[in-house]
Amino acid sequence: MGATLVSIQEDMQQRIASDLHDSTCQHLIAASLGIMRMRNSLSEPTNAERLCDDIDASIDQAIKEIRAFAYLLHPQNLTVAGLKAAIERYAEGFAARTSLRVDASISPEIDRVPYETQRSLLRVVQEALTNVFRHAKATEVEIAIETTNSHFRLRVSDNGRGMPLGQALGGAIAGPPGVGIPAMKVRLQQIGGTLDIRSGPGTGRPGTTLSAVFPRGAVTGKTQPAKGRSRHHGPRKRVH
Image (cartoon, rainbow, N blue to C red; front, side, top):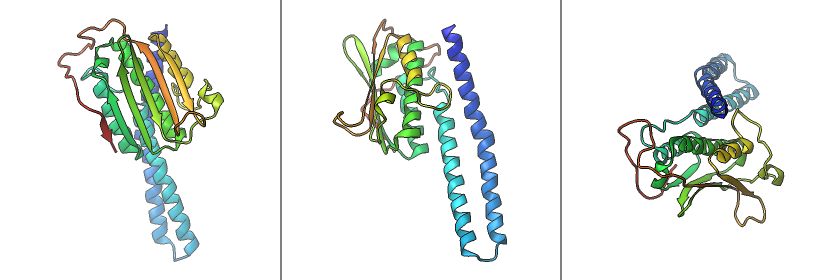
């Protein structure tokens, strides 16, 4: 039943992403072109010109946000190169669409956990970045997956304004399906993991840090359903 609910949720998110990009963006672009035509037909009242500029700016921002949400909600393909490469590509796309600087430091060992675990972790990263984009007012984000002898640790941290204590302890963040702290907790519980969120004064750093710890479990040499996987090694990857 749980797998069915997750599949329905991800299908819904993909549909929302497609609708926002293919339909809503086109309406806003059409409105922007209409305002350009309206400006050309005006005489020269200064206030009307300033109003047109404000409307243009608002529409441009809406288009940027919708494109970012469409990307944030769209599931990434894990079957080509594994979770490390998927997170790095996702970080690049996130940075390009939001103008945030993103550092990604992902242990290659994460590619050896079972496919369903990788799928859950990718969704946690997507949900965490969606919350950073919507709420944090940050300029920098760091994504890291580190290994110990028995566990992996996922960390997503930003330099934004932080969140209220009650929200950090488990309150839902309103937004699209699957976005929010409770959804991340459920995904981590399904793979035997835990979630800890630190934010605000007393943490010793600005912004919010999400930390997830989960067992390494049975590590195998082949966990992906597709052939021809390539493995990506290397140092921390920074995108702008």
